[in-house]
Image (cartoon, rainbow over all chains, first blue to last red; front, side, top):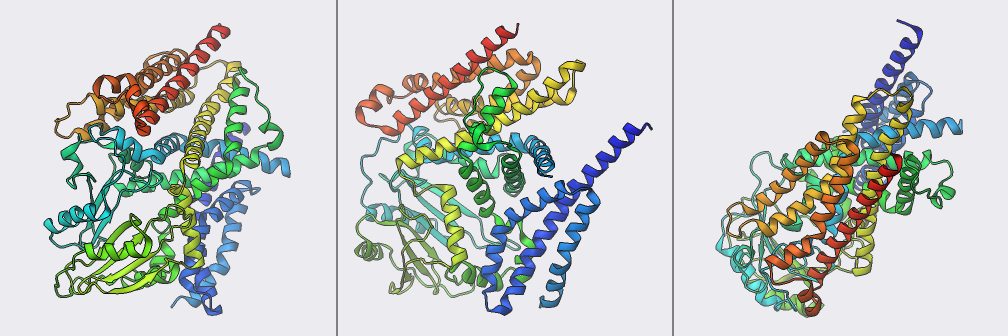
Length: 99
Length: 522
C-alpha cells in the first residue's frame, strides 16, 4: 500500500467513525440530555413534564450542533472523547435521580 | 481556524444535502401543495358545485350526527369538523370521524375520517367523483406512499433532521452571505447554479429553519422516545404527561364504563353559538360516546390564532349540562409547541400570507433542486480534466433529473388522471396515485435512456406541456373552464388553472434556456 493510499484509507475510516459518532453518539447524547434535564430540574420545583417537552423540542437543534462539532473535531477520536465527556455528567445525574 | 471551520461545514453541507436531497425535494413540493390542499380537493371534484355559502351549522350537524349514530358500533371518540373559511384546511368539506377503541398494544385506536357534502350531508362520493384529491398529495409529504405510515414518518424525519444540518452548515459555509445575496451571475454554468442556490436559500432562510424544525416537532416523541418512555410510560403516566406538559385536559379513556344514551348535539350547538356567535363552531369532539362518562367538547374557530389555542365548551354527554367553558390556554412549553406547529401549517394565514407560504415552499423546493444539480455540476467540472466517465455522478444525474423535473411531470399526471379516468371506475382514487408514480418512474427511465442534456430539455418541455394543457383538459372534460370560472368568480378553479399555466411557463422557459445553453456550448 502506498502512502497516499494509506492516507485515503485512514481518511475513510475517520469519516466512517465520525458518521457513527454524529448519528449514533449524537442521538444517544440528546436522548440522555432529554432524560437528565427533567430529572435534574424537577427538584428545583420546575415541572418535570414541561422540561421534558421543552428539552425534546430543543433537542433537534442541539443534535445539529453536536453533528457539526463531531465533523469539525480535529480527529474522530477527539470527537468520540468529546461526546463521552458530555455524556458523563448526564449519565451520573440520570443514574442518581431516576426513580 | 475560522477558515477550517467554514471548510468542514461546507463538506458536511455538500454530503448531507446530497444524501437526502431527493427525498426532501419530494417532501417540499408535495408539502407546498398542502398549503392549497382544500382547493385542490375542490378542483379534483368538479361535480361539486361552487358553494356560495355553507348551510347553517345546525343542518350540517344534524346530518353529521345522524351519520355517526347510524354507524354506531363502539368508538372511543367522534369528531365533526365544520367547513370554514378558505384559510382553514379542509375548507369546503364537512368531515366526520371516529376513533375505534385501541386494540391490544396500540397507543390509540384507528381513526377513520369520512368527508360529507355540506349541502346534502351524504358522503361526498355520492355527489362527486371518487378522488385521492389534494389531501392525499399533502399527506405524502410526511408519510410518503406505498410504505407503512410509520416508516414514512421515520424516513421523512431522518431526512428532515439532515435538512436542518444542511441549512445551518450551508449558512456557515457561506463566506460573504450579504454580498453573495446580491450577486447573480447568469448563464455561467456552475457559478449560476451556485448563485441561484444561495439566493433561494437566503431569501427564505427563516422559513426554511422554521418549517424544518417544526416538521420534526410534529412527531417529536416518536423520534425521541427514550426519555418519555422512561419517565412517563404508556397509560396513566403518559396521560398525566400530556396534561402537565401542555395543559391539555385529561380525558377519561376507560372503556369499561356502563352504557348510557348520548344527548342530542343540536341543542348544545345552539348554546355554543350563543357563546361565540353563529357559524363560529369549528369542530366537535365526543369522548366515550354512549357511555356514562361521555363528554362533548365544542371548539371555536381559531383562524386568527397563531398558537393553536381555541376557546372550548365542555358538556356532560349524558345530561347535557355545561361542565366547563375554557380558553384553551397552555403551559409555556405547550404554547411554544403550539406556535411552532401552527407556523408550520399556516392555517391562520389569510390569502396574502398563504400566497407567501406557498412561494416560500416553492423557493425551498427550488433551493433543494439547485443544490442537487450543483453537486453534479461541480464534480463534472473537476472531472473534465481527467476525462473519464464516473458512474456515481451518472447515477446522481439521473436521480436529479428524474426528481427535479420528473416529479412535477408525475404530479401533473395525477391531475390528468383525475380528469381522464372513467368517473365510475372502481379504485379510482388509488389509480390517480398509481398514475402519478408510474409516470414519475418513467421519467427516470427516460433520463437513463437519453443523453443527459437532451433528456433535460425534453423532460422540461414535457413538464411544460403537461402543466400548460391542464386548463385545456379541464375545459374539455368539465363545464368549468377559465372563461366560466372567471366570470362566475370561482376563484378555486381560476387559481388552479392560472397556477398550472404559470408552472407550464416556468418549465418552458427552463427548457428554452437549457436548449440555448447547449447550442452555445456546441
